Image (cartoon, rainbow, N blue to C red):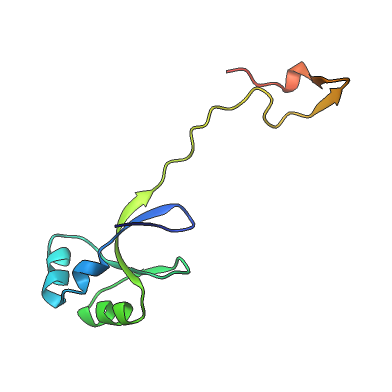
Length: 102
C-alpha cells in the first residue's frame, strides 16, 4: 500500500509484513531496505531493531520504506498567470510587457 505524507513524500507501507513477525521484518532488512516509522503527524525515523519495530506497531504507526517525492505539477503556464489585469466594459486589459509567451 502507498502512503503519501503532507510534504508529498511517497512511502510504501509494509506494516502488514512486519506484523507477521521478526523473521519477515528481517527479510526486508536483509534485502537492503531501510524501514521507517511514519506517524499520522508526518514525522518519520529509521527503525534499527525489532524492538523499535514492535513498539511502532503497538503505537499504531505505519512501518514504511522510502519511495521518493512526487514530481512537481507540470501544468502549462497560462499567458495571464500572475499578471495584473483589469476588466473594463467586458474586456480584459493587461500590459503586454507583463505577459509570458511560451
